[in-house]
Length: 143
Image (cartoon, rainbow, N blue to C red; front, side):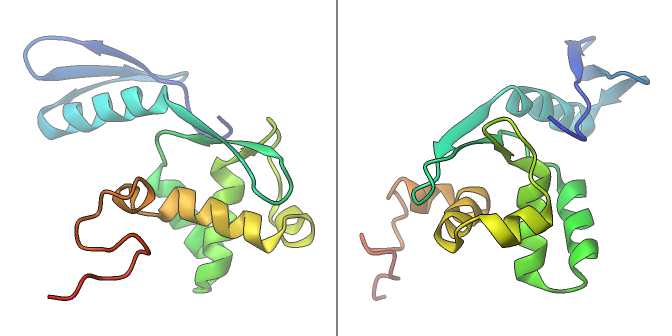
């Protein structure tokens, strides 16, 4: 996806992972090898959703790069809503196209944007209803 390098992962000797992208090959060991393997595996998975208001099909990558989130925060100058919107523009594809922040502000329905924010930043346990600390409405259960 835009801005993310395609990586090829090869398992080497015990606990070693080799990551190859367009510009370099890096051997990782220990926890870095584990993280690189997770990135490669998760990067192969994409989630496709249909926005509830507009009916536009969106693709959300399985691996959401923290560096892109940090860049979105810098771009937003401390405004959380703008940071979330900037991150969505970086990682989500709208029927294969990348929208700009201006496109998001002007063309995307607020309910669709809130849906996307929930898909990206929401707790997976909440989404599938398996969070034991909450009732079916998402409210905290009494202690």
